[in-house]
Each structure stands twice: as C-alpha cells, then as structure tokens.
Image (cartoon, rainbow, N blue to C red; front, top):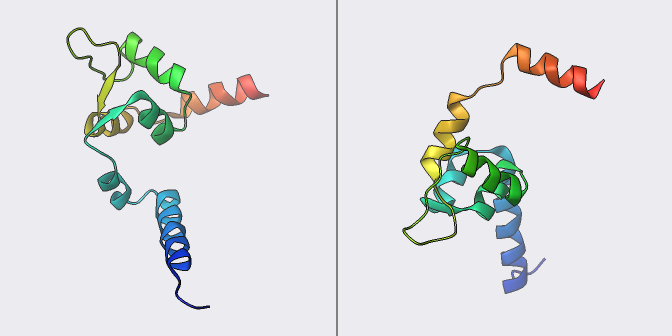
Length: 100
C-alpha cells in the first residue's frame, strides 16, 4: 500500500486507539491537566450527568471558577481519587447480589 496522507493518518489513529485501550501512562500525557465534565466522563466511562452529580456530592474532586457554572477537574486528582478507592471484596459481592 502506498504511503498517502490518508494511509498515514489511519496508521496514526490505529496506534493511538491501541494505546488508549491498553491504559498506558502515555495516555495520561495526552490529557490536559485541567479537564471538563465531558472529558472526565469519557476517561471514566461514565455519563456526563453522573460526573456532575458526583462532583456536587463531593465524590469527585471538582472546582468552579468564581461566578462560573461549569465544573473543572484536575487530571491528577481524578487519578488519585481512583487509586484511593480500590474495589474491595465486599463491593464485588454486593454487585453480584444486585445483578443476580
């Protein structure tokens, strides 16, 4: 296959998609240091409304600019929150009870 601009972009996109699915640390470098609710939702595989709800409840660390309406999230704080809340064996049993 000849190296056309279109084939080069496809090759680039394919490698990007693969690295995103593997969850490598290179992925975190692609994210800006400050995220909006949609970016956090995409990162966590959640609905944007749930991200906003978790921010209002204090379950996710979030900020608003004075007079602002939108939530802002620090990328590193989102990762720290995930690391600080690992899944416990009790949590897995509760999920199986609800699903079963």
